[in-house]
Image (cartoon, rainbow, N blue to C red; front, side, top):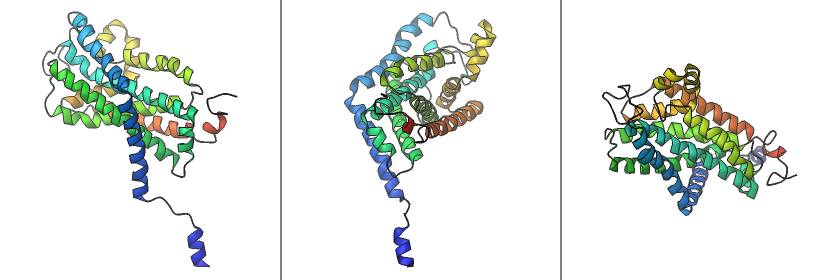
Length: 282
């Protein structure tokens, strides 16, 4: 009787099985990225336009004082480089969320989410895959920026990696949380405009916050409350081998909140089970 009971008791998944799932999801996302070359090009065009065109025009208008982590006066393009790195991750996080909506309409994501593996682990694997893709895009941008004579300390290319991973996880989990409430693919573009542009422009990505405070104290407080601001500052300090502890705490907390919210939103009892037929119809 005891042997029968043992055989009937469902066993948990082994570490190897979890790794196999993680590898499969990351590999699938990587292949999709390689097959969509225009996605890689478009991810670089946006920051490079700001770096090569807008920075040249704003250089004489927006003077940058000596503020941490900088120890001397810097050019405007040097200042905005961390913000453009975060912008790449922001757009990539929303792009990955768009693929979530597409996969759900086509049935791939629905099949994945009903697999025996824990739903939270599957979403986390998807999030890691999107973050890995964003890292490739960011380092490609850093290479082009280096050719443009934007050269942080050599150690900064390594010290910025943990900051990029954490900020990528935060922005990716935010996009995943947003995608959980989108029923139709056509609605996602409009939602992206209401998320991406306010987060990007109401931050320290393009101008220091003391400049914003001089013009509008209310906008300054809004920028301070923006999680994207803290993602930018976390990357900025890490690029010069320093840690902004406040930004680290904000980004880590927002990552947890967004990820937990996405897992709850994708729960069958309150998420996909109430969406109706595939494609959001019905």
